[in-house]
Image (cartoon, rainbow, N blue to C red; front, side, top):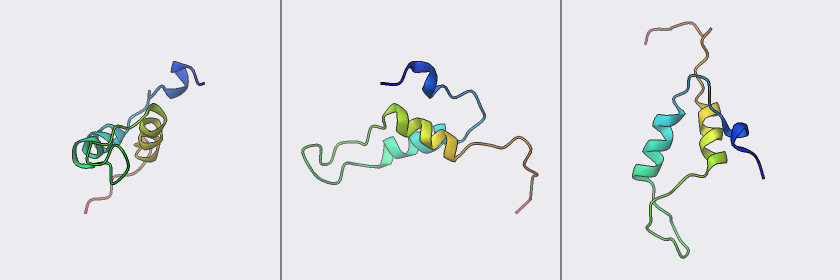
Length: 63
């Protein structure tokens, strides 16, 4: 099992917003937890944080 430091998020990310949206709007589709809210585990939260990581060196490109 991984220790607490392996899931440390010490970088800028939009993952917090994404995970909050998932846990607020998504439901379990089937099985014994059908209809209950999705609750992300630590590794899923860490994965989302890395997926939507903000690169500090990325140039701003207006829409």
